[in-house]
Image (cartoon, rainbow, N blue to C red; front, top):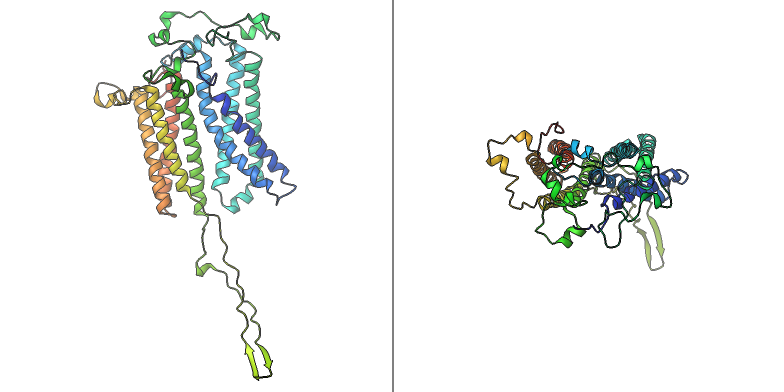
Length: 423
């Protein structure tokens, strides 16, 4: 069994960044109301934007963390009903974790949408929506803090996803009884609901997979030390979140640029100026007649320069991250020749609507192609609104469907109906 370098998962690391950045940014924004021209406002707004965008990979990694700890003894090929039935969680743990998921999901969605509106809005829109946006962003932060409180209580009070390990034992082998701990939690909360696992009810993959490593069963041909530091599933989900974050920023900047011209203003848009022309000065000289001195030319202020916006760079970054996401997915499956992924195309007897892996690949390829086209369009043209909106719409729809299929694969096995969980 491969013990992960970061235990139990990467979610426990990245969750601090969106909470810290967003929390400090909102606080600085409220403080800057007393000093509107202070540079502290600029720093606070950058924190708000980064905190909102980094909340997306925190959520994608959180989805994996929830699946990993809810029933570690089950395989990734298990159906969700089997996972719930064999989960050792008590009703109190389910209560806290479900509320954690809902509060964090809603808070993240509100924060991301608010940041997107601010990023895409013109200067006039930002001025009009300043107070509503600040209040909504503060409410999103409150939701995320409440969700973090529920997870903290579940972990530190009821021992969710926590196991005491002996120095020379496996990571999930308990070294001392629960009642010998200094602070004994409520026994009704930590008592397993159903710790008896029937082997006949689990799949063959679940019987062979070691506890705590059920989601990393693919790609065994790779060195174990690589998978210890970079688990393929977590790498894949981290890249999913980062791809969505940069795509959101690229969408906002693409719309923002339509309301803003940057660079030197054309001559037709330079406001007329009527500088006062000085009268010629007559200088007398003893050697000859007085000579007039030409007045200095009037000083005309240069036209206004606006900050340039380059959404193509963000689309290109999204494209690179999407490619890394695809590589992580192939590493996770261990099938670099794509034989399993192309099986629905080769075998006409298979039902495409019951193969989630096939549609996961289809939507992933759609996202890569749309980001590539958007990077090209926004680079060569500043005013191609129709094609930009068309491919933005396609990439958003593909991303939403991709997330839905990904959740089905993560919680209800890679194969099954794409319309919902298997009955």
